[in-house]
Image (cartoon, rainbow, N blue to C red; front, side):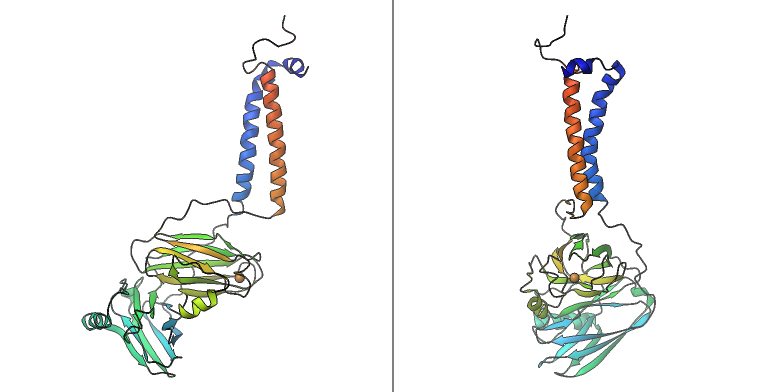
Length: 344
Ligand SMILES: [Cu+2]
């Protein structure tokens, strides 16, 4: 019998068996966890994405949706922001930049209440652009606005209320949230859940996106909170509701780009890659702003090493069970009353 043989093991080895067993069981649990952890993106250096004190020039399209596109602008303190305003629509639009930092204008303001706000607080720019024409808004910021965020709207009645708003963020040392994201050739964002905690809105979010593969992608964040995009509807949704940010990610391993944007209110904001076919293949994620995300799950992987880890774990588990049986019969654990052969 096997138990007789085991009982002949030297006592030190017999005493070691439960410990060996415990070690093996820990290994079976620990190996897959350690393996999964190795798939988490390694932290990249942050903080080098914000150029200092350089003048900025950007083109903003005005449409009859009505919308600004893009709606997140970055500028540097102690510099001039030049905005080329292109009215692509058949209605007049204005680019009216609030003079009050870090204040979100409520969409429930009536047109006359919005006018009153600007009469009381002034504006950094107020440019009216006729249909089909182009105009410039040049705004000089001094050094003291570092980290500030100013909202711009169209004050033509009901255009702001219908979604015609955006933000200028003075980047250098903003009170924002810095996050890291990766794109892969298997059409995924890693991680696919981002969390930005903020207590004050607009919340400035700067995402450093690193390409882990050779395909080009975009990091495009929906302006609609708690709204599910689908591969079939996202293009039309973004036409009507300009994304918070639509940042191209160049091709090539290690290529990085910053996606800098401002969020008006807490919520869950979906982000996708807009390259045709990528979202349909699963390239999407969720940004939780001011709301705790669900508990993290270990990212699934199709890498070949997972198979080895699986079979290795099964093997170790088998050994562990075998050792447990041997340990039980060896007398290390309480033995069944009676039924034992070999006792005198
Ligand atoms: Cu993509």
